[in-house]
Image 1 (tube, rainbow, N blue to C red):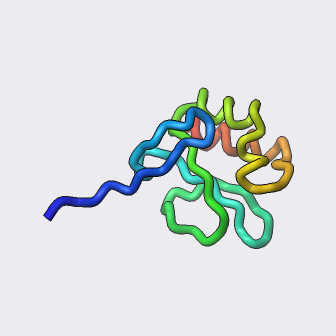
Image 2 (cartoon, rainbow, N blue to C red; image 1 turned 90 degrees about the vertical axis):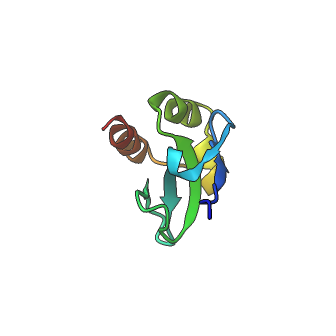
Image 3 (tube, rainbow, N blue to C red; image 1 turned 90 degrees about the horizontal axis):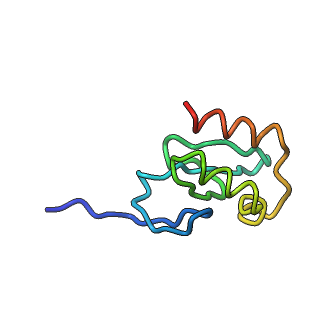
Length: 86
């Protein structure tokens, strides 16, 4: 029995990839935005490649703002950048 592949689209480069090859960013019901390493946290999720250039593109084109239907504060965007760089 083979493992099924669950594809998700990177909001920056628009490529379809296995969700385990992407970084999931979540906005929970309290409005907090953070990286979800478990890929299972409750809330609205958006996927970005585990590549700083894709996150930078998502920030520049405001893809994250559109995905979460709100303005993402600059300090949270910096935290996301630091988490992906690690």
